[in-house]
Image 1 (cartoon, rainbow, N blue to C red):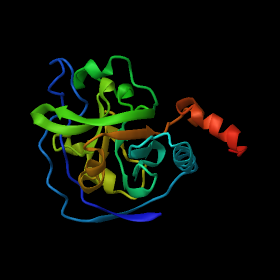
Image 2 (image 1 turned 30 degrees about the horizontal axis):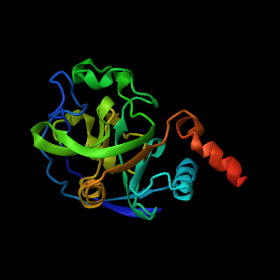
Image 3 (image 1 turned 90 degrees about the horizontal axis):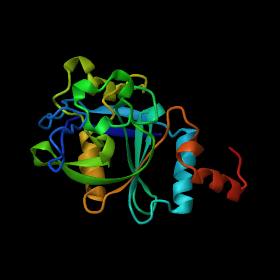
Image 4 (image 1 turned 135 degrees about the horizontal axis):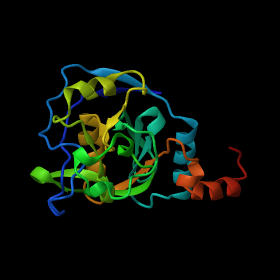
Amino acid sequence: MIDILLALAGLALAVPASTPATKHARPPAAKPAPRASSVVKIELTRSAAMTRVVDWIAASRDNGSLPYIVIDKNNAAAFLFDADGQPLAEAPVLIGVAVGDEATPGIGSKNLAEIGPAEKTTPAGRFLAKYGLAAGRQKVLWVDYATSVALHPIPTGYNPKERRRQRMASPTSDDNRITFGCINVPNLFYSKSVQPLFRKKGGYVYILPDTKPLEAVFPLLLGQTVASGGSR
């Protein structure tokens, strides 16, 4: 477990400039939020599923020559690694309000008002994430462009009743499901750790499942287990 210093702030996520006007990213457009006035200590623990996926990536070099982030949805945590598999940083995250590992077909072309509660999922899987332009000429890290899922700080345009900053700063992961499906991270984690690594060539984002077996989301895990003779 590692203590983390957080300062929460926001970056908007909206429609990419190169997309049709009918396509909307899940968070509302907004300017970056001011940093929170207090610093919060959060302790994160690696789950067994998280450890297994991290070990598999390192052993197989599945990430190639790119950095990567592993998102543990059940524990609302993000873990950042460089291209050599060295851990660099970790942080709490906010994820989609609905439990689920699939994105609704066509979700990326829907207006925010058209997205139902059950559709607000953060899909599980392995994604090649790259920076791209969003509305306002701001660059965001697109995790899955087709479903309008990105990783970014908390936007300022959210409903205050959602209490996103407070949820991220809470010591439990029980209240971290609140977004339309995007992954909200602390501002310092985003600007000081993620951006320097992902800015030029991008990197991989591995999102662990809520309910699916790990092998259903990452099939190569089964081969890794069999090859090593290890037990689950």
